[in-house]
Length: 397
Image 1 (cartoon, rainbow, N blue to C red):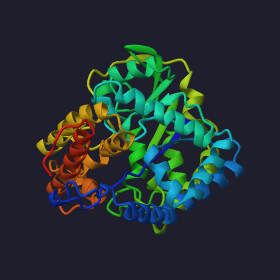
Image 2: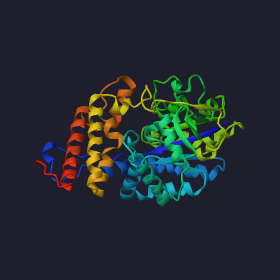
Image 3: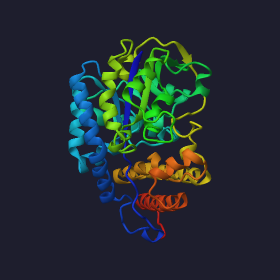
Image 4: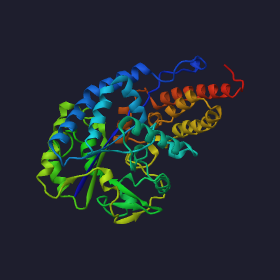
């Protein structure tokens, strides 16, 4: 059994308070100081200590491997707020035992926009990984692990060897997520699937005292992995699991440090990067004609487009994008793409209940989803005004 530990690093450019009265004022849509302050705080609690633990594990255990994805907006903020975090990430990559995964630069829903937005964002991200880390990724992931047959065709056209996807029961139709599959419409693209029960045991349940398995120890977790049938197990989660979503006081960092030693107690278990298994021989083709993700209980796009507020905002952003591209100004294009970041639509979530609702509330700083929608639409309206002015079309102030 090969263990694929994959961690995702992302921070959005959060919006400043942008009122209707601010239209035409020239104010930035994004709260620079707040974003950088948040990044510094998370670096202190999570990025630095977790990266230090991972560096120590790579040095102590030649068999240890992991994979990372790092969004463009994360890198932009790290350069300003905590450049040492990027240096620590680069040091991990230089070991040769840490693979980087390609994705959309802005952690956006670009895969739902007309061409060429998706291709351009992935190209921007590839260039960033090359410049910042000297990496040429062979594996692709979409925002929030979105996957479909159409996205597999895109990956094939972009010459990726594999994609990451959720090992969702509905898509697997009775097959286990612990094997290598290939995309039915694009058989050169292998699929590396997330084992969501084991991943969520750490990502969501680790510090829950109401969980029947609390506390989760490294030896217990290694035994669960060893008892799992199959050829590979994808442990995919947010990097912020280690120190932010679960604070250091929960024992999560000690759990991370202890896990490789406990894995060594099981000779059948080995670590691998996603690139090391990307060229393997798949067990069977897998067809997913709809778009699935790793978010919420339904594993679809409902976390971002599940209600009228979200759909209205996204459709408006699509229409503004036509003007933005015609305007041809880099600053306007960059602001538009930052507004495409999926987090903005995530904050507008109003449906659902229980665990789904609480997770959305955890990430949002707005008083309500309606507040998030109004703020977003004000910023988008101002961006539209700028694009029209660039095109020489009179607008009302």
